[in-house]
Length: 454
Image 1 (cartoon, rainbow, N blue to C red):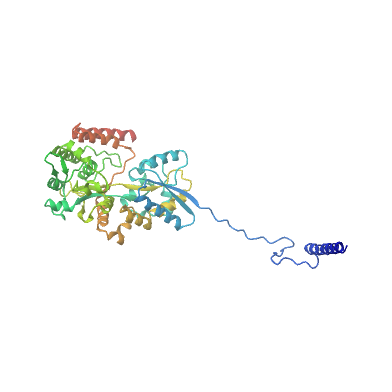
Image 2 (cartoon, rainbow, N blue to C red):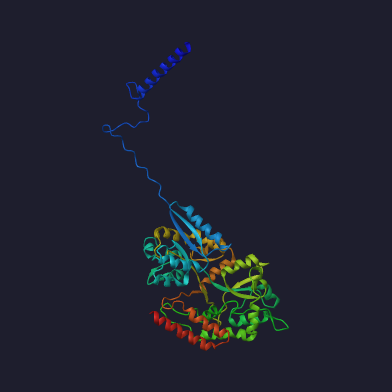
């Protein structure tokens, strides 16, 4: 009984305690306002809190390029990463697509209204893409933010179509003579005196040739078709004039180009075309690349070829460089150059953000990084005089050689004219027609092409 009473007493005490607590929570006379409550202003209306801005979302861009090798991909990805880290508004994703494949895919994406935001493209066909409305006009951006002074003038001119700018130059190249000093010395030639003219080039080559007792080629001093190509020599002979001028003038069947083609063929006549082709079949890459392996004593290549010598030759000091030999003394060391642009494809969703990326990619730091680690000539002319880069005598030579270098853009009036020209020249090289017939037929075919497109 005592236990029952005790339990009833405890229950009653608990009910009384809860009642007092509920009265306090209901806001009785003794209840206090919470300390953090905002006082009312203008009656019972609570004060408005200041609006809190939500952070803006980053603009995401896709950047397409064909640099996927173990050498170049890390370099381009580092530059893109540096851009992403340089600001908070834009994030760029690098997308690798094999050479040519990305350009074909980009055309399909442009047609579908979903192109990439920026793309690396070939420098020779800017006008073609502009004419076909495949690329954004950059002139409005340049009107507000003129960066044209960054670039080599001849490169920037190649970005124009009908007076407007449709791309920015990213990099370029220049071709010149690489030669093996050690083999020069063995053949009794002065390693510090490379050939200056075509006549000297041929003279040196004959001294450097090694032909076995069976008549097979063991080493060639040089061969212009194997180690330079017909275009390089035919344009060199013609004072740097391209096959087709921007106004549509066709300069294929020209006396100097004809003389050059005959000279090219004379090397096969002397050595035997079949022997030359069999020798070509022994060429490899890396340590088996013909100049590095000692199968060729001289070779015409662009400047980035030095990276192969640097990485795979037993002794890089065995190799030297020289300007393209002159067609004849005093005609000039004319070379040809190519390279790539960076563009905004037509219909890109965020062209303003893409423009910011283009500016970064062609500014000093990005261009210097590309030049230093790729051993490449870049479009930003100030980088060409950078003290750190110019300490390398080979790189300094490539910059100097740009003075002799000509761009050969494809005019709008002659799209893909090479498909008409090159087969005719190749037929002459294979002995299937005379050089005169080859150039005459190519001249007419390209002239007809120009007429169709003018």
